[in-house]
Image 1 (cartoon, rainbow, N blue to C red):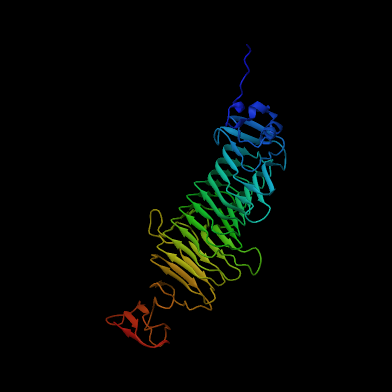
Image 2: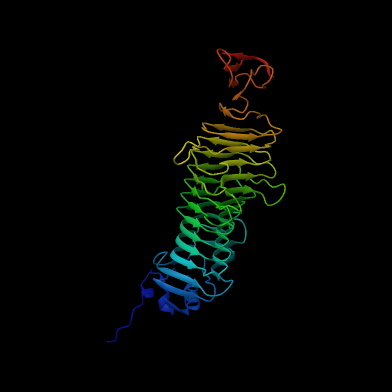
Length: 414
């Protein structure tokens, strides 16, 4: 009786091993054809440890998993200029999983992983986990109109953009390292309800921000993320929020930065956050964040209308109590207020109710605590309940309460 050799792919329920289709793990021969033959079966595929040369793009299907042996063990190595390594072109994609491998662009591939939706929501329930992608000339990972998808444990290096999310919503990005991208490590263009947790974005010697938020959206949350500095001579902000077209709402509604850290670089002109608004934007909140020794400003709120809340921010340096300023300019009369901020705050304001050099809000826009030289009576406009500290006062002329009236009278010294 003769025995038939059993391959791994013949085991019931097991993924297909690309070695059974002729893929070369030494990197010497083109493996694109063999891997695509395995993908064409529609079954999950397994790519064992090794380096696999790609002369043309891989074309997976929906409901299919591409599984490697680890982000440093299984390497898909691009060998054609301008190619896309793993391509999901415009269409309907769901339950896609790419796990435990390295997509290496070798400065030849334009895109590492490409997920493009035919319309909003046509890419859904996708997972890219424990994936390294680097040195693609355009995008390491690009997602268009994806929804309910997760990007976890990414290691993205180089290229113009690390992760580019275009009009995505309900996307979760976590535990990822993105660095040295020439345009931005992470870009969120439009989109809504996306959450970014425990990510580290670093551009050390690249003239670009680590995070770029463009053209609005809503409900963006950045929780526990770290942003490290950009270099002098180019873009000098670590996070930029702006519009590409006049009249667009550039800042996401209810955009929240919580427990985030901006690490300055004292030898370079580094600013942390710049909001360059066009049109009307609403409610950016910074809560429990740290701005550590930037040489420029911690937060620069630009020259249009918005509401911004800055709460419980630690502006202290590593080794000294030097504080970077929060700068506000021409906010057009809409409310800006802060809570529990120590340190130095600079305001250059026109057409706005804020006129003092610093103040602490009591929690409402109309009631605030300001300071200055001289008595506020007949000078400082405020609502009943406002407080005023006189910096050159004496007994009963240092602290004032606005007890009556709606204009600049009714201030009583205490």
